[in-house]
Image 1 (cartoon, rainbow, N blue to C red):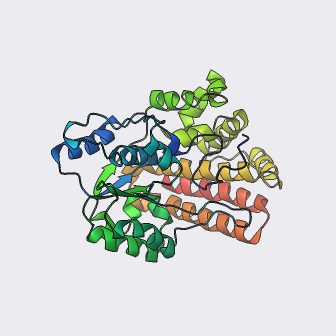
Image 2: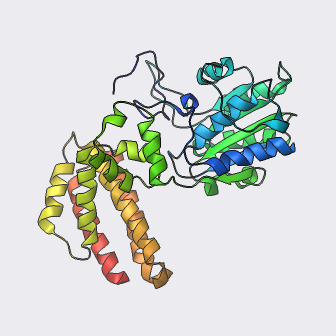
Image 3: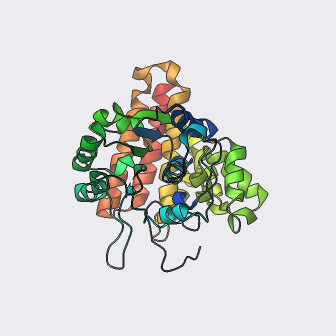
Length: 353
């Protein structure tokens, strides 16, 4: 997808799709939105929210919807019925441009001409952003901090955020997006109201994708249905899979895994050869993701066998993750790793049978 060169190359943006702060429609999370509306109408809106759930289901979209509505000085909390705002609204334009004086966004820094996107949210960035809360909002309204996402906070930056959440200034709101809320600093979790957003049903994912217009809305219905079946209720993952070759690769790897402990040596060898090419990085990562998801699903389906029977499969999963990191760091040949991966999985499945 081609993009305007002036557009931020943001680490949390899916190429060719609007960023969550530019998305004005929310699909499938009416209960989550109602939780905020109820708090506003009752005058008991909690000051910090941990919005959790899988990646790509609309957590950040909800956070920005809340921010746009609550930054409006004309907000009447007692009578509010929806978080909808017009994209032509000045506040909406400021939020989209990250220029509203009463809003701070903690995120990994986007890429520049000289630097790649940052891997974490450093403590200095937290301190600068939270300076927004050191004085009263100019219009007497709310001051809002969005953290997207909590997984990117370092230990130091998480503790800096915690200090402000512990003693929040009046009329402040913290919206913390997390793909794995159980891993968020316990002291932060304990001070937040937790809102868990669940994977979207296929009709909601389909509506979200069609709302994006071309080229997404022009994908064949067959590919869209296949991507929906593999997308696990995530708009982002489904968008990533709107590609016939990717769907075919996932299907091929899944069929090989489903045959375990029997292995098709020739097919596994062909897969290893194909994924060892220098131009196969994306397919290689997709294969690893497919394996991890298959193991996770297999463990869940076999929970009745008990921890001892399933331990070999858990150990193999950890071994795969460790070996994959070594392959990446030392730029090693992928072929032996892929062959060993299937052999180890076959042994683990055999032991759990």
